[in-house]
Image (cartoon, rainbow, N blue to C red):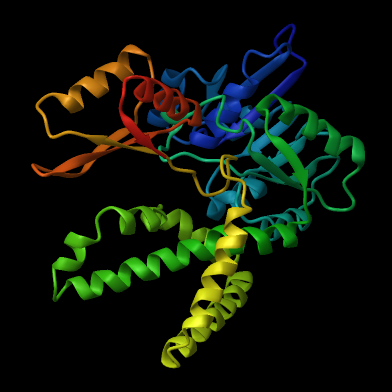
Length: 369
């Protein structure tokens, strides 16, 4: 029975970073109740402790009962299971089921094979994330200014689509509509393929390092930064890549053509072709949005020249703390007696980074971003 004053129930399956952040966007809004499903008691305790939900249940049926919206925020490899379980239940007429997976064609096709009656599936993909994970990292600001892709099938009526679109306005994301297959082509190119390349590159260097440890020693800094996505969750990415297998096989063939072209110009010592390739890449990259949230997390780092004097790192950290600027990490890249040290400060939010730049510049530090 619905609580008095509640006219919209939202059920979330998988209350981690994404699911928990969605819950925080909806919780407390007039007439909305947010319920989470936990598959075991210790997970239920974590969800309750986090405070992101109005109610947590160990029952799939209880979570889904009378829900107006169901968000499947589980790994891609688990989406079919939950769709099939929901298909067995007497869901509320007009209920909208959506997911947050980074592949859309396979789950949309799977949903079409199920016998949902007066229940609608609309694929979704919020293109935002964090270096942190789990419900403890959830934030109502996670999706702000990010793109949130919805991939409804042609048979989905416009008023059904608009209901989900309106609900997602609470996330402050920019909702865009894309066909499932087109989504997978684009995301495969800008996210899935880069992950494959990063993993292959790191494993290549790792193999060299077995006979020469200097590879690992000298790979600190830039190499670690540009390959950071190689540290992504192996199981999650296994499921994502297999789900988008056909698209990725085509993209890898195109990538191999690009590598072959570079191989040829190097064999020919063709300096002009190398310059042209870098100019073309630089021109396109310079046109990319610099500060908008995207599917691969942006790095909010600044670099400060600091003298090699006792207590300097502590003073900088104290200044940031006093100004209530949240710092996620700091690293000394270089510090020698005859060379100023380079201190890298990392932030999870762009606003914290901008405030740190202003503060430290006013204090007389040389700051670069």
